[in-house]
Image (cartoon, rainbow over all chains, first blue to last red; front, side):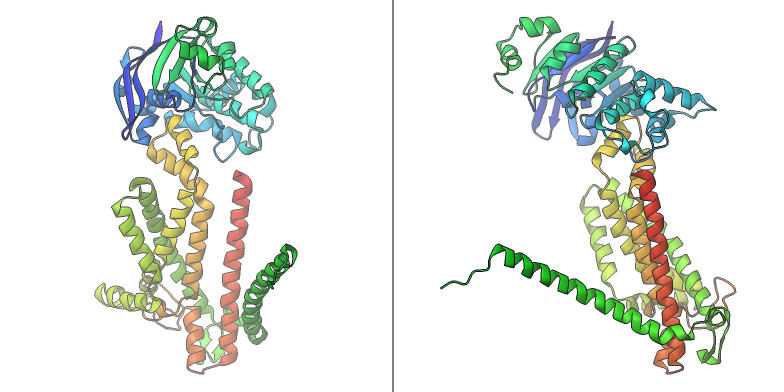
Length: 247
Length: 280
């Protein structure tokens, strides 16, 4: 079943075209890896899907369909609840871990009794962070280590009960152990969510993604099963990038 | 032959000059405070703080002026803070550095540089006479509010601009609207900076004479309502010294004024510190 379907997507910042006629489908409960050198349009793609690009005064054309609905007909707050985005650098909001976790859910509705605590417990557990923070929920979130902060960001997104989780180089600033923890988390969560993982680390795409898309200068060069992309890509540029010849 | 100074000597010279500059500043400050305290602190007593003013200030205490200063300042801050913070939010978050932003910022900067006597004159003509509010706490408070709004706008603007863009993006990406983001992320994060502006405003309001002497008047009675005329501490000090009524009482009043300003700064600093410790 197709979760997100993108057709003929073009995106401009002023006169610079960041995405050129992109069409691709993302299956439900799979991880799509997106690879490509800098300025290839990977982040722009994510920001277009949750319409964050509108804040950058970007101009879009084409369609993005989420579950048979054009995203431009979905109320923007609702869209962003359903499509979460994890940034490259973990950014925790000032305030406690608890406050970080409750910020998103509280924007969308009111909670009674222990309902919110339950959501926070579930989200932190799913992000494999509960054991480390259960006794310090009232502590400032900035006291956590970088890896913990990134898992907090993931938990914060999970607390919104999203359908699609987009990650923009989520491990770029993390050590191998923290990276492994986040990859393990993604694997566990794949059953329930659909992932789009932008990564500069081609090996990471090879490890976790079901399908991989290769972007170059705003164009989608090819998208296929990850094994195919990494063993026998159709395009010689994909092959060159994976072998580290450029980018 | 060229004369060269080695890098080590260079450092020593730079260090000495900077230290000297700092020392001069600090010494001047302490000299002024020390001089006023030396002449005034002997006059201070509980009676001085809690008694009515008698015989034009030659005798008695300064309770009416303490109350007057308190009410006029509070009034000014209550009016100026929401207006100043609101304007700053509008400027930074909604006008995006466009023409309107530049015009209003320029206006605020000009307003901040206007001498306070001009505000006094404006307050007298507009609030006291035109709006018929008379010499009163309201007139004085409104005039001071107009005077400190630019300070609050400017400091709040800088504080809001200093909030990392990423905080806003996080809020948006979690489905927050613009107003949610401003109220729940931007303003709480910039609160220390906003407080700094408000404290600067309080400092200006408490120490102001020219703007209040024309608008709040110089009555020595204990204020009974917002329409009472009142004499603030700074005005009282000015009149005592200028008209040669009593120099010892003038110094005592000045001492109280300085202590109040120091206290306001100290309390605000503590509050800010506690806030920072809690959130960062």
